[in-house]
Length: 96
Image (cartoon, rainbow, N blue to C red; front, top):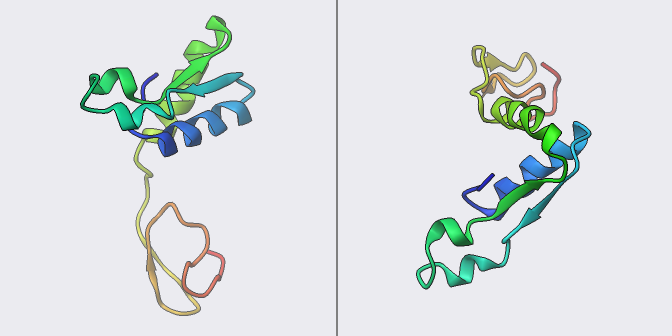
């Protein structure tokens, strides 16, 4: 799987490993060659070690890419408006 940048590749690889899927990130140092060679050839890639894990790996990555459902919430302690994916207030640290 190709990724837009090395940070996304590392994030996805970490999630795959947490799900028990053996993988590695490749092409993380080719960004300097962008323009000399095509983008798709120098984009970071995630390689799955075992072909039988591919379907599960796609599920994990699809879940990471899916938008978070829910409504924004307001912190009861400080009144900060927060996005639904946060379980803790970034401003005061109070739990949702």
